[in-house]
Length: 185
Image (cartoon, rainbow, N blue to C red):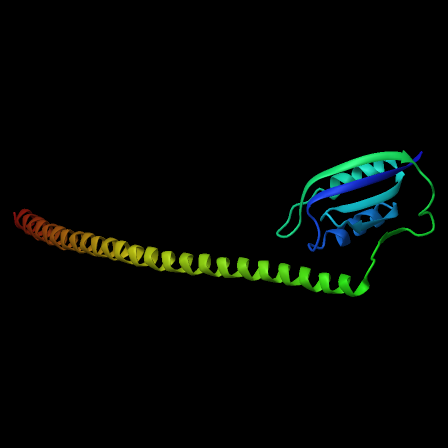
């Protein structure tokens, strides 16, 4: 059974692109109604449809982003009137010129916020790059120490191998002499 809901949305919801998001959600849920800015800075939404669908809309429009932030939504339900049946869901705009200005101002807020995020992201990337360079420098020193240790180890192994080879050669020469002496007898 269709009902009519009147919602008063409080928070930072004007000049934040909020009504466009509400309209999109309401249209996707196939609700009928309208929304408008109120002089006190809140947004009023009147919609008709199934109560469960309206409750879903309420959950979807409780948003918080870089500009808009919903503090609360006051809701009252009445019987549906059919007032919006042929109209779908719209934004009620008393002054199109002011609405256009407000749209530009909202865009400026979003772009300004994005530029701040970009600037802080660039700072973080530069710090990360600096830290990586320091770490690579430390790693290079460690790898240099490892390489020197390996070279020294290989040199010692080589020396041991040469010494062992000489000992084996000396032993073989001695063995060869012993065999020759035994053979002569």
